[in-house]
Image (cartoon, rainbow, N blue to C red; front, top):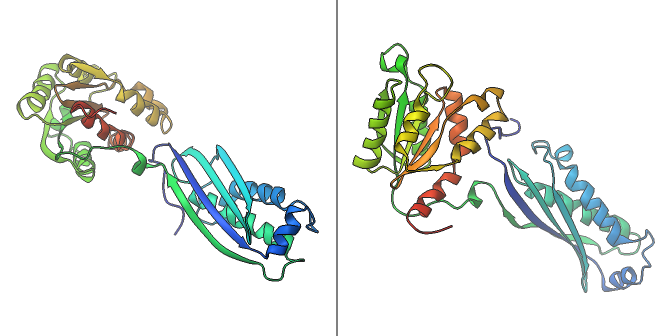
Length: 303
């Protein structure tokens, strides 16, 4: 048991809005409006308490990740026979803030309860609920059209010669299938510009696949020529690979040395990934689900 591993998740804007309702008597509402609560300003105290609670959530809830909160907004509304505490929380992070919002309104409501209990014996907390949340992979627009098809091309002299077993390409196939692609083709070629170029053209022009992922040949070794071959094939370069490098750089300093490129040929997207299984795993984690939107754009569906 413990916290979920979110190390491979990408940062997205995540929001949550929660609400708690404290049921009070109409006489209590009157006293609060007139500023006659014996413990002082209820509204301001609840705002401060809810704000502090949101920031301390990971100290209170065992398996919540510590999250850098970018925004906390607290509203305390006096109704006819209740006091409503509503909190909106925002972050740009790997995991959501619904628990932070729920903890905030809970502590805000308890603060109201504590401050009013000397004058109202009928007090109760009626409900604590999440009103909305956004962000994460479910908040990213994807592609809901036809079945997408993909290919994986492993670029490696040692794998081609049978000296080393391919793990990276097989991992890429597994991840692509997990995201709903039919992987029509899987191949291995030597680190040779002409051979790489020929395979990429076959995948794009003859098989008319939607996505081609290459694994290997993106470094600075004398035989690393995958980017050069890819640039000879693509018609329009896209800068997906910059996002992959940024993502990787937060995990290993060597990520900046990858020379991988990305581009479009016809209606096919080609993305270069490095050759190690770890780099492939991290690269695909950064690639999805955002890359799915490109297929809608290529079909003229706009943004």
